[in-house]
Image (cartoon, rainbow, N blue to C red; front, side, top):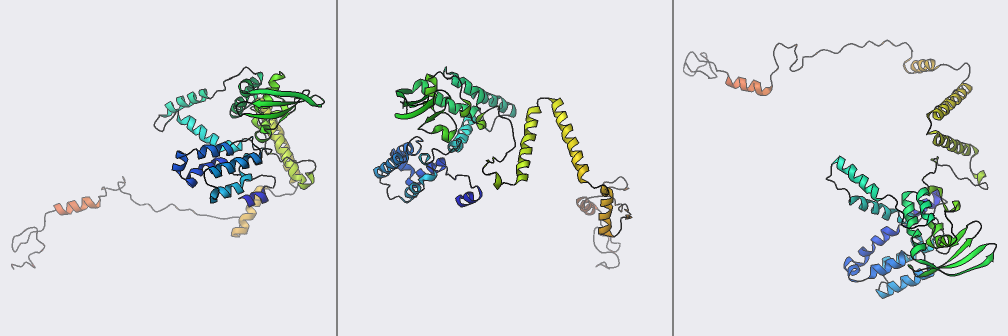
Length: 400
């Protein structure tokens, strides 16, 4: 798969699912070993930490393997060899859009709805419970920050919960250790203390444009602002999330558009001009449909305009002496059968009397009925011996 992805999707980075890899750990070392020791807990603390640097991960991995005598384990040795494919510390600057948790998020949704439904409920009861489950998932503000309220208005529900989790940090778990304007030009450098994670993070914040960056690299990898930048924005009384940090893919009000190839100006020569025009055309059509779907008059006007343009293109592409569709059809028949005048006499099928038909004078009997009647019939009587129900007569009677 990795070779195929590299050849076909040249701009795509192939990574492995951490969730599936960690599920295999108990199979490799034994379930009893994981239950009797804290091996799985210590390994998870090293693997799932998204903020650690690569060298810190290596030290933590080696420490866990040495503590539990797994340095020479074949599977763990191989997984450490390909650590750049599944450990977040090695691709923190790569935008993943929350894909690292896609499977676990799906499993979490399944577990959540299973608390409200079961296979034995009726259809009506299912809908009532489903509405109850949706009410339980309605966004509820947990802080007094204007940033959280703004996020609830613009973000989709799933992304809002991710943002809300980070939004609680500035209120409950973050503080500032030092702040200085070393860079000049209104750029402020701050060292933010994360008491929950027990680590310090460096944040650069532009006082004029609100442009920010943090050493945790959360926005670069997941597209959501981290708690450390939000803490600085809270101190600076920023009431709304800057537009530069609101990705269109996370917005509730984003317009539905066709998938358009994002062609850079430098790479425009690599793509066919016709494909670019078709892509732009589809984008414009979908934009027009999205903008007019609230008004029947606008939709009718759009349909009329497209229909008129279609007629103009058809009339322009058809020659004046072009044969009609009927003439083309007759020509095709003549090529296939030799003539376009074909006489076909279709005769009615032969009639047959079905069982139970009203046209029959007597009802057709089944084989069982016929056998019963034959059995109940009185047999012939021999005139020579006087016996009845026998198979002989007076000509071949044994008593003759």
